[in-house]
View 1 (tube, rainbow, N blue to C red):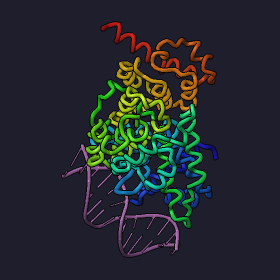
View 2 (view 1 turned 90 degrees about the vertical axis):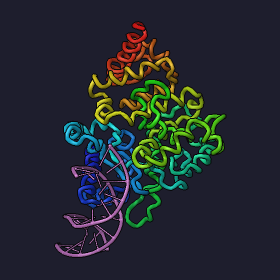
View 3 (view 1 turned 30 degrees about the vertical axis):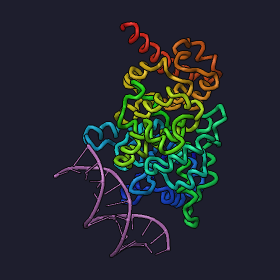
Length: 396
DNA sequence: CTCTGCGCACGTG
DNA sequence: CACGTGCGCAGAG
């Protein structure tokens, strides 16, 4: 079966578990996929990771355990009916597009699975809010960020991560204790998250615009990526800092929802800590993260589907375009559904200013990316971002 | 045994 | 209040 088919299996499985009122956790998903289709749990884990990266599937921490949600079906509680429409529409797209990370469910929480595992992963800083303490810890480790820090290709890591996570850990198959999968997921999520960055793509109106949502992210994010030299280190430090504020609140309240998302998001950032080190980055990222706050629809659309929505987001984003760092740009494209191409932007060190200067030919030939994605990126994103940015600023 | 269905309690808006 | 979630149980195979 193709990857698309496999995705469908996973989504169907999640839906099935949900309808049965059983928690769609890694173990159940792997088991059901194996039973129904005979595929290996490892493969399922791998594919699941990909789906999480794309946000077709949302990994959330609900009531203390990890659950997976079919993003296409997640809707904000608030408006049911309307959403439904949206949802429906989205579902159609679901596989392909994946999209939003609507946060709808209250369920989202921090997916921190076990701190241990996570930590082990190193790659990410999973713990989110729940563990304020951990944050401290994270930070420490953050510094090192051992795993992928050095690499230029954070993006890459995205893909890799899932894979690796998959391979190793997941072996939920009944016998194994769960550690493999469960914990793994933590890390996965992180990696995944990276991919997840998309949220960030949304609009970062202003760096710290979203307080609430942001906070969540921050907390999550901050630990890892954000950790700058100055901040963190100790919890003490942390608290005082922005995160601190954010953190606690977030953690406390939203554990569920936001947190989950956040984690992902933050994980994303984890990918490239270095970049983040800059303050601005942090801010920016956070903003992006804010996405969570955005309506699912938009986000989903974001993937490239609707220009309108996209443009909308862009507008907001454009404001900060000049402030975007290389990581921000890469995150944006990754979130927009072009993770591979995002790597190219990173490799070429395209930051917000560079992005504004890019011409069609630069995108089509200067990044060494395939023509198809390049055209879409230029027409739907680069051009729109530039236009929006200049319109706004010119006016002013 | 595993898989399924679902009552119910819980948390959220 | 409505609604999503998932535990824990009972029943089916």
